[in-house]
Length: 120
Image (cartoon, rainbow, N blue to C red; front, side, top):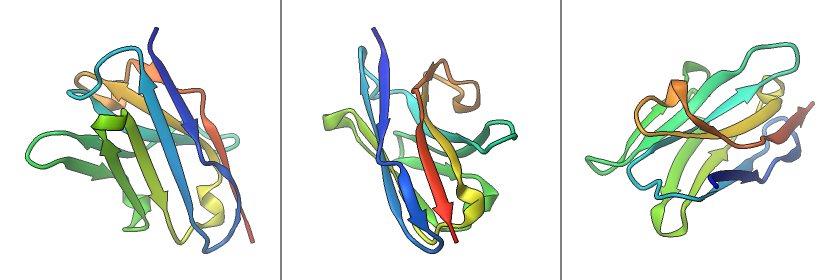
């Protein structure tokens, strides 16, 4: 059974930081693209960031990240991270870990999500 389990969400003030983690199990994800999506209240899910192994690691970020977030992976631990700095109120939402063999924006595997709340 494939599982993606997120952790690290919580309540933080504007300008603060959080580090999300995602532990993957159930198959070998080393050749999968993994990433993060988020969903704010009343809005659709949106892409946040992705990480693909190859060429030293390829990362991709949504425009709204603007250098504030950093995605990383540790294949030895089957874990992915999202370091979020300079958080804004509009970053509030549920953050989902995703994985796919080809297209992260059509990911086959999703975690249950972790809540991030940024207060002023």
